[in-house]
Image (cartoon, rainbow, N blue to C red):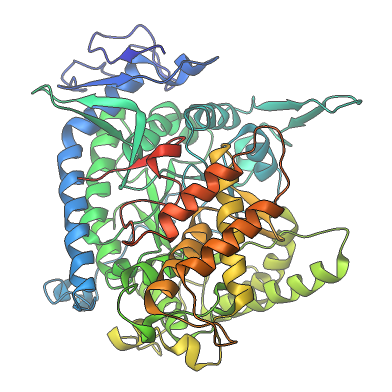
Length: 584
């Protein structure tokens, strides 16, 4: 292992694209030197030092100096709020922030002054490895969500080489070659080296709860902790690319995941302010879109927009993580909070429709874009019948979003872009968005958001097939994740960490609640253990597979007596490949 440590001495060159005379250097009055240090313990591969420069590490260290203590406090607050819900105190809109909600005068920055963010009707998502980066930027979507979070297994290689891929793509130099057994190597290239000809890049760093285990932050008192994955991802990307993006006609844009309240949004806003001052970027250059994918955040959408108003472009309905958050929050609250099979919880379920309609109304009232949820279907050219049935479902989903007022939507596969675009084109026409469409008809309160039982009252059920699917998808996704692949094609769906979390949390809740499948058979640990063994035995074994490890992880996060609330499905420490969850 090779270790790097930050330095406060003035560097000889500036990787952000300016000469040493253009900007103040670290340690000068314009750029304060960090008081702590950041130690890199991961192995340094080819070109890693281009990302892990002393200057970049100084910047990331300064972010830790200023914000790591607040981050820790906010994670402690999360624990308390989760305990409150477990104790029977339901989430609700905050009385203390009512003046923000009642004030009709304020607006967010939106897409004004943010080139490439005005028209977001179709966004494609995917990890940042070189091949996927090129495919996404060649896809024809309006926006690419460059995902360092749920669609990426956070191995050290993925973290740093993802940064390298983005660095090169922004500068138009990224290429990738794949060896083809018995044939000529296949080369991937960007269809244009002009950034404005390609989808706008919106980078998603990891959430506040995650750590980067290959970096250690040591404060001025000598206390050593693992680095914040959020600050590492954000800091490295912005330092190397912020000015370059602006000079090439775009800007440093971010998706912010897993927020649970307005104070966490305020922390991000303060990070943005410091970062822009440090790098000499005008305030407001950074724009953020917040994923509303946790139950607590659904009650604080307006406050989140307010805290980020000078840097906020919009909100996104992160519906799969939202379902996981609902299950996790009410996992011990009895049968009335038990959801049916994942496949049966559609966006027409009353509690899900309330969440999305509130999001659109909130965004448009404040001048923000509302971006719809993910369509994860993967077309199968060998099964046109399966593909066409799925296309019809995607069309219906996107038609509903467009007619409800959303300004754009997500897809996971390039073949879905035209399908989604057609539905949004039919509503938007030549307009880039429909932010001016105010949904004054929407009235959503606590009852509507918490009417979890509405999904089963509509006739959806828990089935033996749904149980099998949860176990099978959970194990197969984990096996992929442990091999370093965070976006996995399983049963014609692009699965990521969010859907795997649903799988394991539903299994745990069904066991804890004594839920029975449609044939009246109870879901027990013994039943799931037998099913798990059967599935593992049937999976094909390839060299380097992690099937047995994946089964052990699934057993730990789905069958434990106590639900591991601070462990993500991939963060079971015995088999960890990347980020752990911070446990304050």
